[in-house]
Image (cartoon, rainbow, N blue to C red; front, side, top):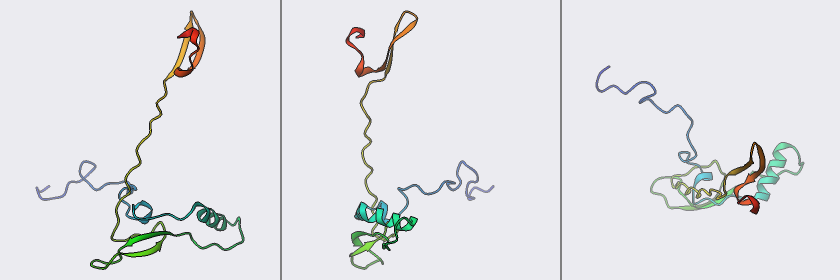
Length: 127
């Protein structure tokens, strides 16, 4: 192997997994895109599954910053979630909310379990 050759194998080769949502550049993951209403999406899903006979168009969201070509102005457009343009900016990740609850507690009296449950619910007699 020469010094200029690309590395081979799992220690330096190309990634083997699919793209994560942070690298997929579609409207669904863009901060400028406003999704369609839940009612429109539900009606389309019922039509697509054959649960409704009423024809429903594919729901589209809206974006006021669509850029189709370099050096062109931004434009407003109705777009579907899978559409992609040159003005993509990833949505910020939502903060992770960790529930602040105590752990699961087992209170023993001798060789038998007297009480089990969440730490906040311990009866006063066992505190």
